[in-house]
Image (cartoon, rainbow, N blue to C red; front, top):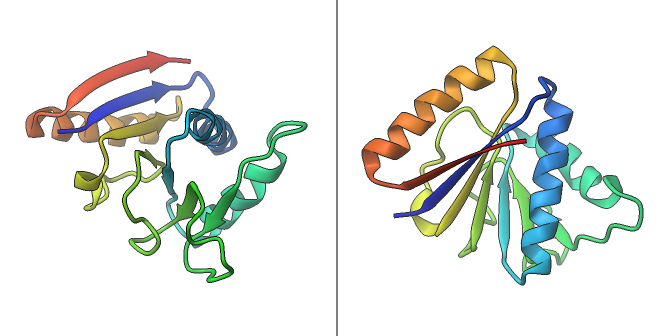
Length: 142
């Protein structure tokens, strides 16, 4: 079973969620972990791809965009919206409203939740599902 950490943000906007995903990915990479950031759709994945280069002055987070086939497929951090390019990774950062069907391959999962009521409602459903499946759950208010 995976360790699942719910990071609950005070902000309601999706940009805050994306910024936290970048920060978590950078921290994991600096600790020599591999990461897959699972975006809602291809457009979100592309926005995250750009944000990973610019989210903080002086940041350098080597990453690739799944499906691009540009030589970055073996990057420590991959961003995608499907099942392509996931591979075996240490951390899944989930930005979707559902639990991805491939979480079994991850020892750690980060669920990022904004204060938006729709986001919170879907995160409560995911929390209950994870709990029922026997995962170790933790909540962090940010």
